[in-house]
Length: 316
Length: 300
Image (cartoon, rainbow over all chains, first blue to last red; front, side):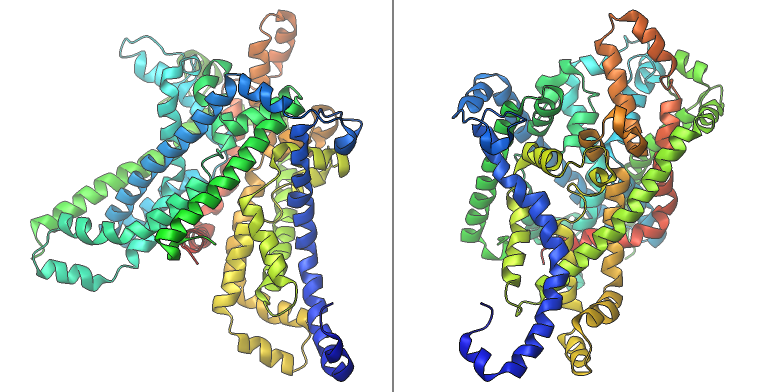
C-alpha cells in the first residue's frame, strides 16, 4: 500500500532502509493518534445523541430515534434565544473592549524608556491570565459579597449608600463580566500587539519625526495602520469562536445565581447544566449539536470571506 | 529636542500602564489580606484592604485540616507532574511525526489534528464516551486524560519550531552516521527543542494546575474525593454554598452543615494556598510564557 509493486521487486534494499525510517515515525505518532481518536473523534459520532431519545443502559446505537424532538424542545423554550444572544453579544463586546484596551496599552508601554518599569508593568498585567476562574470567582466574591464584600462594606456603607445585592441584580452583570474578562486577558493580548509594534521598522518613525510629525500623528499614521493585520487575524480567530464562550467565566463569576441567568448564561453553561444538573441528555446534546454545527459553519464562512479579500490572512 | 512632548509621552505612558498594572495586582492583594484577617472582624466589617484585626486563624485551621488540604495539594502536584511529562512526550512525538512530510500518511495525521480545532462532538458526547466506554469516572485518568493531554495549538507550535529552527541537514548527517529515528529524536531534536518544550510544558502545567472542570465532570463526592485537587476543593466550596442557599428551608440540616463549612476567611486562605506556587514561580517562568504567547499569537 505504501510503495508500488515494481519498486518492491527492484529495490528491496532501498525499501528496507525506508521501512527503518518509516516505522519509528509511525510508532512516535501513534500515542497522539490514539489520543485524538479517543478524545476528539470517538465523541463525534456522539452528535447522534441529539436525534435520539437516549436510554443510558442501551447505549447510543440501540436507543430509539426521536427525530427533531430534542431540537423542538430546545427552540420552543425561551432559553435558546437568550443563550444565543448572550454568547454572541458578550463575544463581540469582549473583542471590542479587549482590543481597544490592549492596543492602547501596547502602544504606551512601547514608549516607556525605562526597561525596568516596562518589564514590571508587563509582568503585573499578565498575572491574572495565569489564574483559574475558580480563584478569580473567590476574588470576585471578596469584592461583591452582599454581606462581607469590600464594595458594600468599605465603599458604599461609609458613603451612606444602600448596600447592593450584587448577585441578585441583573443590570450590573454585563458590565462586570466585560470588566473581569478584559482584566484577565489584557496582559496576554497586550503582549501579542506589543510584539507586532516592536517589529515595525524604526526608520518609519525616524522619517516621520524628521518631517515634523508629533507622537500622536506617528501613532495614528504609522503604528495603528501597521497593527491592522494583527487585529484582523485575531478578529478572524475569534469570530470563528463566536458560538463558544469561556465556561469558567460565565459559570464561576456569577456564583451560579439563578436570578442572573438571563444576562449571564451562555451556550456552554446551558449545556453543562442540562447535562450534569438535570441529566437531560436530549436537551444538552441538542444545544451542543447546535453549537458545534453553527460554529463549524461560521469558521468556514469567515475563512472563505477572508480568503477572497486577503488570502494571506486566511487560516487554511 | 528632548522636548516637552517627549516628557509628556513618558508621563502619560507611565500613568496609564501604572494604573493598569495596579488594577491587575490589587485584587490579589485583597485576597491575601482577606486570608489574614480575623474571621470575626471580617464577618462583621467585610473584606477590607485595611483590616483592624489580623489573625492567622485561617491558616491554623488549614494546618489542622492538613490531611484534607495536604492530600489535595499532593494530588495537584502529582497530577501536574505526570500531566506535563505525558503531555510534552505525546505532543513532541506527534509534532515530529507530522513534520516529516515525505513519510506516507503524515499529511492525514496533520489534517486529523487541525480538524479538531474546527469541529468537535461537544461536551455531551465527550462525557458519555469517557463515562460509558472508558469508565474513567473516579479514577486518576479522569483528571489526566480528558481534553488536557494534547491540544492542536501546542502541537502546531512545536511542529513550526522544528520546521523553522532545526536545519534538515542535522537530521541528514545523523542518518548517514547510522543513527536510528529514535536516536535522532532523543539526541538531536529534543535537545534543540528545549526552548519550545519549556513553553508548552509551562502551558500544560498551568492547565493541569488550574483545572477544576474534569474534576467537576468525572469525580463524585462519595467515590472520588481521594482524587480532589486544590482547584476542585475550591470549586466544591462554591457549589456547597450554593446548595445551602437553595435549600434554605431545611434548617436543621443547614445547622449541621454550616459547622463544617469554611468560614469567611478560610476559603480565601485556601485560594491563596492554591495560587501560591504560581506566584512564587512566576518570575522564573515568565520568559517562556511570554515567548509562548508571541509564538502562538502571530501567524506562522
